[in-house]
Amino acid sequence: MNRSTGRIVRIGLALTLGVLAVNAIYSYWNIRQIAEHERWVTHTQEFLAATSGAFLTLRDAENGLRGYIITGDPTYLEPYHSAVVSVRDDIDRLRRLAGDSPAQRARIDVAQEHIHTRLALLKECLRLGREEGVETARRFLLGAAARQQVGTLRVIFDAIEAEENGLLRVRTAAARRAYTGAVFSIVISAAVSIALIGLINATAGWSIAARARAEALQETDRRKDEFLAQLAHELRNPLSAIRAALESLFLNMRADPGVRGAGEAIDHQVQHVSRLIEDLLDASRIAQGKLDLRCELLDLMEAVDLAIEISRPMIEARGHQLLVERPPAGLSLKGDRARLAQIFANLLVNAAKYSPRESRIWLAAAWEDGQAVVRVRDEGQGIAPEMLPKLFGLYTQEERVQDDAAGGLGIGLSLVRRLAELHGGTVEARSEGPGHGSEFTIRIPLAQASPVSSEPASRAEGLAATPARPRRILLADDNKEFAEMYAQMLGSRGHDVRVAHDGASAIEMAREFGPDVILTDIGLPELDGFEVARWLRSQHETSEVLLIALSGRTGEEDRRRAMEVGFDHYLTKPVRFAEVEALLASQQRLPQAAGAPA
Image 1 (tube, helix red, strand yellow):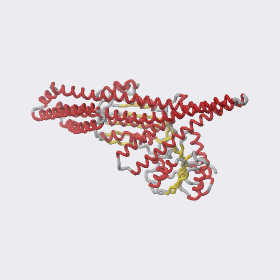
Image 2: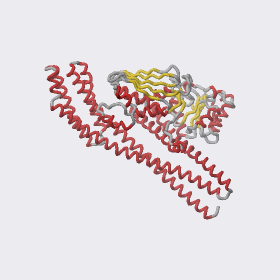
Image 3: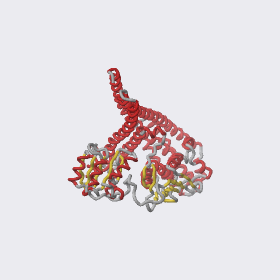
Image 4: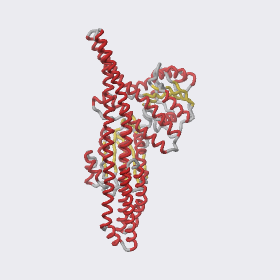
């Protein structure tokens, strides 16, 4: 390489490093912006939901009273009295949510005055119905003053929603811009890094023959793939430490719902960022244009239980009774647990929303003809026959549904169908008509022809319902913050824990400590997790230890290699503490791992 070429290379290297540094700062700023805008978008959506809820509650009161006046049946007064109590709570919640907007607080104050006036009118109407007859009450309720009150309230609530929808559009647009900036900066960083590797290898290839240059290009491509995989791995490590800190907080502050709620929100964002990082850095998947399903071998009930947790607040808020029928054995399938949970949660929330308060909802999971079948049935308002063919219509129907005063059916159901189809499944709806409830059936192909009794190796949740007895545990991970946090959590459960930060130390500590369980990172320095596992399985005193891999790599090749060298389980970072606890409680070893060769 001559002096001129060397100078060009040095200048290019300096410029590349400069671009990467600027991009790193820009990426950090964008991530902060995304988090802030998401917080405001969530707040705005909550405000809109509270606004709609307050108006609908007032309508419930009026409808209950109207039913009593028309029919004379006193049972219609139950929703009236319930709504009268609830609407005050709804207004108080709106005022709390509007704490950052003086204009909205003023509108809410005006709305509250009109609501009090409306409630007084309804109370007077009830008195007339009881004392002077339903005909007098009906004329009073349909009078001009009553109609004017309804129109005034509608105008006030429309103004509140219009203001908040405007804010939502502005905040969503800002979040989208920050997201686009983050994507752009990450893509630029990856492109510049790849270009740097290409520049170095191409420069080396200038002084060799054509065949050597071709080999250098192949090596560059290989290194590019390794670089992207390693970058994803390194980004997952700090997320693992964040999750470990959160779960430690959960263990120590269970009685504080505010702190736990904030922690769960952060945990949700950790999952979101983990998925975003993997999508952005998986070059082959982006090139092929595939959707971001994260398929794994799992038990159907893992997704069902997650869906129940997601939908529980809505179900409990409306006083419903959820009846769950579980299959007699595990239903193993290949799918994206979060997306499957989204399907079932959508159906459960719809059932809760469109059913009378304190009614029943059924969820049944079963095996039928090589398929996992989940049915969600309710006692709700049902579906008109003419609506059934349109129920899973395209997303373009959403605006029409949202404008429906009753809320309508179909919001999100098209997404349910698309997610089911992506899993190779189907969704169908049945109803005997309005007032007779509805039933939705999801069918997903099983991973094998019949239910299985054993748990999949990739997940440990649900293996044990009781806490693990105290065990001797060796934890090996070079991320010291993650390791120390997990060691504290395991120690708080009564386990005797030792920590190592490299492969050689892990082996030496295993000799001296004699652990029952070893959790080890795959990417350890000096000796990696694969080498540690081979050594442990080759020694008589550690050949039967429960061996769990912790890894930031999600590739099937890494998982297969881990099973071949003797790991019992393979957990992907960020690791949930519940998964580790379940494995410790069961201490279940895989048959093929127990016989791994030395």
